Length: 98
Image 1 (cartoon, rainbow, N blue to C red):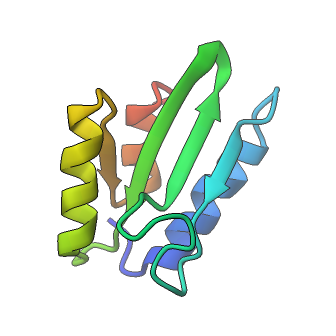
Image 2 (cartoon, rainbow, N blue to C red; image 1 turned 45 degrees about the vertical axis):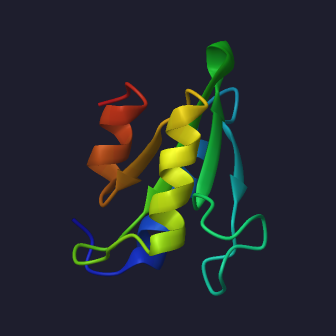
């Protein structure tokens, strides 16, 4: 697991950009509560085959806020899973690239 969250953002964004065709990513601002919706995941990743991944990035010791946990529960009710990821390896396993 990463000791800090921002380097993990950078690693995953770089990995997505290096795919072909490039995987598209919507990224919430990591320096403020989400500019998308309070509690929303950090990344929404669009990959080939119409697959979409909702990814909340956390450092080794990071915890979900109450708003993030509530968002994840409501997303699950809609049939979407919010994956909490603490390393590039975990991300690759979720997207099937490990």
